[in-house]
Image 1: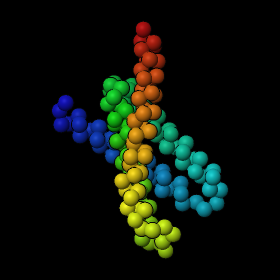
Image 2 (image 1 turned 30 degrees about the vertical axis):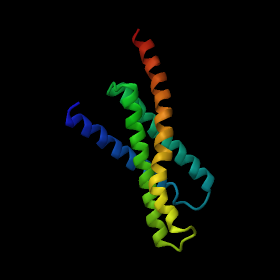
Image 3 (image 1 turned 180 degrees about the horizontal axis):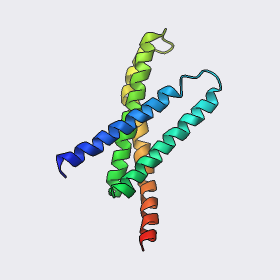
Length: 137
């Protein structure tokens, strides 16, 4: 695999991860109807996640495992960015939690978002692959 291909998938993962973080931060701003905004954030994130898997499998024709890895890296980047935003926010307001929790989140959130994203992307990519295979047959 050449350097341009590696760089382009990682750049896409950075963009999608930044989009996950932007969704997380932007949908947390409203202070009224919080459950509705949280649901909207989950739905927006799920749409980005599904679009990323579809783009990898349909447009780029990536393998199942590389699709899952690229999607998981994007989710991990988003998790890290959200943890970073939470850490910065905790420095600007009076702390409600011990600051060490926010530093721990910089490690934990990427893992907690990346591992499930990988596992679900393997299943979703396999199902999408089967659907595409049946359509082409």
